[in-house]
Length: 400
Ligand code: AMP
Ligand code: MG
Image 1 (tube, rainbow, N blue to C red):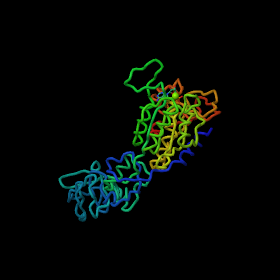
Image 2 (cartoon, rainbow, N blue to C red):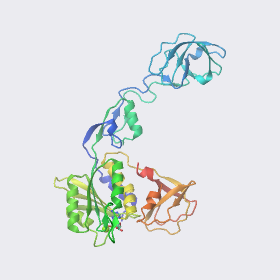
Image 3 (cartoon, helix red, strand yellow):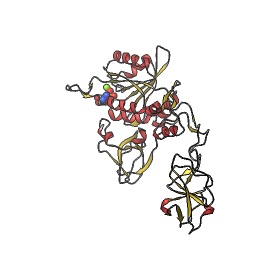
Image 4 (cartoon, rainbow, N blue to C red):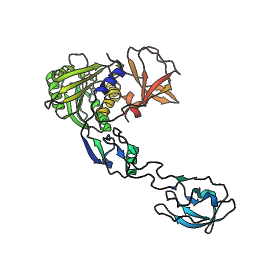
């Protein structure tokens, strides 16, 4: 059995980024991965400009009880005139600072009478001026290849005037669900059946990543059906993901099916929930390897395994340079007395600065994940006493 860290490293080692790229409009690029660096063709801000509504002056012209003539008015979007000696300019936030002015005083610190202004408080040289290029210099690389586009990065791209971005093409993920007992919501449940919750969860997780998803539905628990589905799934996908059927029971056919069509690279991770996680390669007709990831059927295990392993793997396949989630330590608001044989990822919330656990940590209890803010990470063989620091992985990070 591999440790969780070894399994992650192995997966990331095997994740070859999709090579094809495409130019798409900025508006359609949220969540996509930049394939080329973005270089600024402009300077931001283009000119020294005012950070305040107020008055621009030359500091040398200032004296405590001196009235300066307000000789011009510069709203944002207009260029003023060079400041003549002994005058000030009425100026607004974002307006270019006129030539000759070296300081802006905010209007709250000014006394105004007709077209004259007096500033009692000594201004500071250079105050309230945003310098040309202080955000972005012309020719600077503002976004690197491999950066995933979020709201702020799209804003940066727009600030240098980009209308299109060159990104890696979408990753194609085919998906199916094993289990004779699972049915789709919308159908009545017969005795012994349960609804397919993994489909909803995995579709949402994959949509969040921006993958192109091909859902092949529910596949019966027998080898032929599984081989068939796998073969179909691998035809057009970069990655095939399944849920269930990866344990050791005789109703579990996924591993055998993968071995028929390719090979298994790993299949067990020493963690709880989780454990079964099959990673393999499928040989496709086109001769291209398709990646295979078989998730456990238990809904909590499927979710946690996706967040910790599948997501970073898919991000790397999408071309992302960084796939790490941030974690931090928090004091435990609980005792964990029995050391586990496997590393545990417990569903937890932060309350009053401490991690508290969902009362039922069974891998079938999906409400624990819906309730949780994150996962508390406890190494195998470790115990925890209330107040000890424990590692916490926020779901916002794991799903970012
Ligand atoms: P398996 O990994 O196939 O042995 O399944 C483990 C457990 O997860 C069983 O209790 C299954 O009924 C349940 N399970 C499997 N697939 C799903 C699914 N798609 N949605 C909800 N529960 C599932
Ligand atoms: Mg099953």
